[in-house]
Amino acid sequence: MKTYSIALLPGDGIGNPVTEAAWDVLQATAKTSGFSLEGTAFPWSCDFYKQTGAMMPTDGIETLSRFDAILLGAVGWPAEVPDSVSLHGLLLPIRKAFTQYANIRPHRLLPGVSGPLKSGAFDILCIRENTEGEYSGAGGRIHQGTADEVAVETSIFTRKGVERILRFAFEQARMRRGKLASVTKSNAQKYSMVFWDEITRRLAAEYPDVEVTSYHIDAMAARMVMAPESLDVVVASNLFGDILTDLGAAIQGGLGFAASANINPDRSAPSMFEPVHGSAPDIAHLGIANPIAAIWSGAMMLEHLGETPAAARMVSAIEATTKAGIGIIPGRDKTETIARAVLERL
Ligand code: ATP
Ligand code: MG
Image 1 (tube, rainbow, N blue to C red):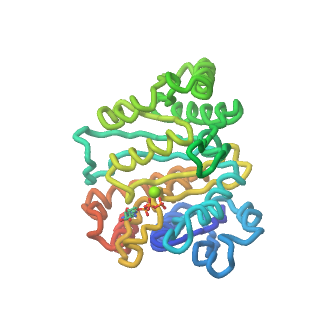
Image 2: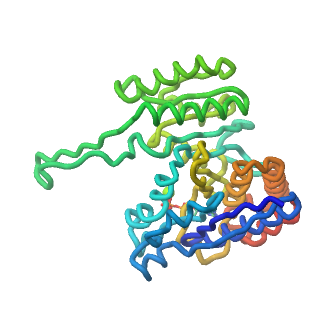
């Protein structure tokens, strides 16, 4: 029997209960799908930081590199550890070390969930460049604290980086409904965004079966609200993708339903799967965190591992759960009630 080794990083706050719920559902799925999942949990978190002075041990990345995939809950406890320490000490180093350059997030309304839009069904896959662009951290400040102070933040777009994310997006579109929306702001940013558009056009010739359209970020933000059903795969840079996927989470009914994956498409290192939400300190001790986003992220992990029917079964169980009205009203159902409902429907 095939066995996958999974590193579990529950992290902080609600990352713990939702990862536990996702793991229970994953185990039950594996048991009836002819493969097994062997999980190893690591306590790397803000608590770990308070005890040891680091978010993970110095050989943390090396340890994780031996796993087939990583399932993460949430990282951050801003009241005690600044986000600049927690995110830069755990989440970001993993994404970078394992070249997880594609951050993907499915946005659609699960049955029974009412989003804020009047529109009908939509099914969007947002793909965000995860390693460079506007979040490269290049820049600086001069004349600090004076009236002449200047801050510069440089976006870095490399041919290699842009090409690989666009190629990944074309491949995803090909496996879905064959439509790709590439998002830039090339009317205002004449170097990086024009570069991105050029590469999009060049790759389009290699994918004649994919219908590709370029949009400006402002127009795309409006389109996701006004006509989300017109979209299939949406690809954008780090910053634009960050913003659009929060919009996507909102139109799909909120963070309780927003799943994500940090993918290394070349499979040279493990990919990481995590709900979009953070540690949610305000509800962390109430037992009402919605585990659906984490369970869905777990299904994305199985899909990435090649266990497509098992992943589909997990998604069906989630859909049957929300269709029955469970987990659709924020704060009403307990985490374990929702998890149990998904397990029963597997
Ligand atoms: P981060 O900085 O880590 O992104 P954040 O402060 O932006 O965190 P989250 O922790 O993601 O925000 O959550 C924002 C709010 O949404 C939470 O305070 C909580 O009330 C709600 N929320 C988030 N995730 C869930 C969930 N799974 N179930 C229920 N409510 C949630
Ligand atoms: Mg946030």
